[in-house]
Image 1 (cartoon, one colour):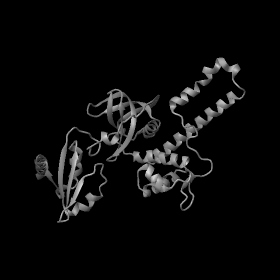
Image 2: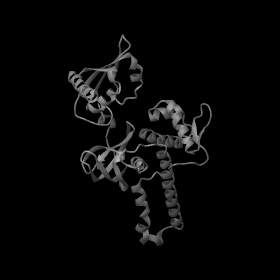
Image 3: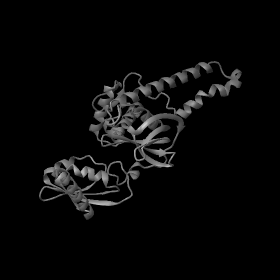
Image 4: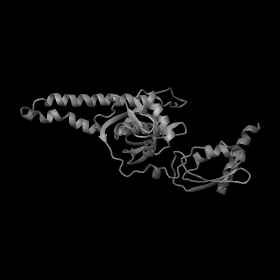
Length: 320
């Protein structure tokens, strides 16, 4: 879902900069199919953004004088511009007439833009219905703040709960990407505390504050970072699974929306041979378990024994 949020913002920018842009070009620029663009346009229209279809072969445009970013400033640029009067104070007698009023109009435009951008982000974030951990009451998910920081490439100062150590810690994070996985949202970014890229679960943030400090993503590649990752949990192994799916579940497996691209071979009995390489086994095995006896692990052989032992434990649990 986070990918959709970023795509919605890009669609707004593309329509604003290219009135009359066609759905086909929007799809190419956003790297999705056209029917996805039509759904996104409907979602933006539902949020009262004045998008108009100009007619067959004429594309999309904003009606009236709508503009999302009249001043495309970064927070650092805005801070620098706001300090201009104090810097020029000693040259006040030399400034041309009208400078003060012009400066006030520019700053007023920037403040209006900030307010409008915040409203749009809150509307977009509002359509996302996030879950809540079972042990806690519903709380602020900080999703809107994190989206804003990711779009403006601002560092965030956070308090984050680490489950494995059962402790909270203060961290400065450069938020690169929001990634939805298994009904949860994760943030992938550079952690200044760890001096390394890390993956953070959104529901574990206890506090998020945007800093007046920007960052550059450089040559970071999300696909390379998540290479051979089944869902979100990264590992350092190289495990090649071969699974045989029974014909009764074959059509459901083919409809699965997967991050990795497996090699799938249709078998004569109607089943499937499913081959995929992952760098960690836990999430893949959890996914596989939903198919029960309709999914048989062929390779690696060691995982056949792992599955057999697991089934033995389940059997003993229910024998009484």
